[in-house]
Image (cartoon, rainbow, N blue to C red; front, side, top):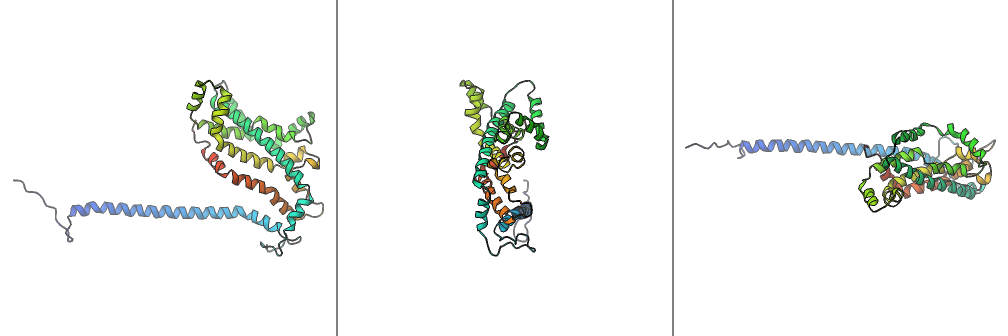
Length: 311
């Protein structure tokens, strides 16, 4: 008869095999604990770095608000006094009344929303064609379209001015609105990448039901890209609301000026009231801040999902 081997016991009454099996488990838990601590430390340092960057980005806004509340003569004091003494809230009222602010806001809103609607419609339609339609030279045309992003706007100022002067559009809103209705290369690229991340099965089902290309784009695809459209809308709103060069070149009458040109009206020949400049800047910046926070969720989602596809 064969004899069974009995594993020797440890001083605590456990077999050496059980102790050997428990040792790797203890080492693994120790390693996992160290990795968890390292990840927690990295997360804390990352959050601290983000807080520092956020605070740095908020410094100009804090300086602008502090200067806007200072009485005239304290704007250039050194060392800098962050909390004004006394606080002058009347600077906002005076800044509003110094220039026709309501007229400037109305003009800026007309130009901004007119361009925004045109850029959303035209860029999304062109991007859909580049993403879904098959035609000769599609990739070459897309590269030509995207390459226009390398052209700075100042290069186009003189040709655009001559063209708009020929059609008698100078000192009107049309030179600032109409170009947006022909698409923007950056928005076309961004929306095309978003289109490529969508499944084509929904469009195939629409074609089976008899929908054409435009009907499929308008009724099926366009509602699916709301996050990307929100991101493009925020980009377009900020760009046109803050545009200074375009209105400076094409608008000559005070009743047609925008808020960006309105800031320039506070710079006199011999003196500058920085308290009023900062107060007016806060007034015209508030709509941009409100639009960003209103569409922040869609904006971040649109930026995050754009370009996920590798096609």
